Length: 235
View 1: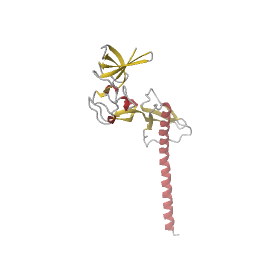
View 2: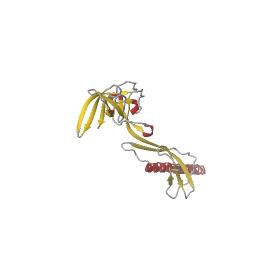
View 3: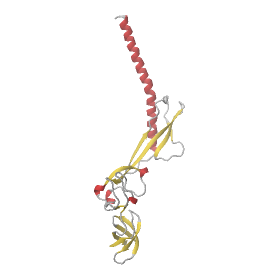
View 4: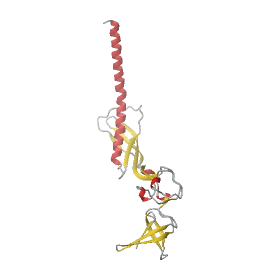
């Protein structure tokens, strides 16, 4: 083997050695950053409960790759500094006391629940049918007022204002009972249920109290909306 061949092989060897060394050095900080992100996510999962019937998603933000964090010889410490709401974005402090470093990690939290949403644009005055509605997972922090889990709860109700496709249907978007609608008035006492017809004197959604007039006696009473076109009066 010639001297030139030796030199070529040595050049290749040291080149490969330098490549693997640089790869190891560059990957070490990234591994540390990945561990910090993972630690922050796992900590948030211990302090934020998954909603019943829903889903919880937790995702840490990517950290600046220029951060150089030495490997920690003990388990990383985590905390939520200050008074923070445990919804939306949470900042987690991850630290290593033996190496003397700490990092603030933004973590995005989403709590999702099944909600009835508009399957297409809904115009004011439309009467809702099954084809108008679908169920999607909606982030809880964007939900306000009365919302619905099942389309059957609001099929047959009337839209009070325009609703965009994909928007969750809220109680104030519709009236399960609208003013001047014919309604069934249900009354119960001592296990005896009485059902009669009447007229709604105002709009209302599920669980709201409205005044209704008995079609026979003309008596006006207060009742709770318990379904589409249905008002229950308790004596």
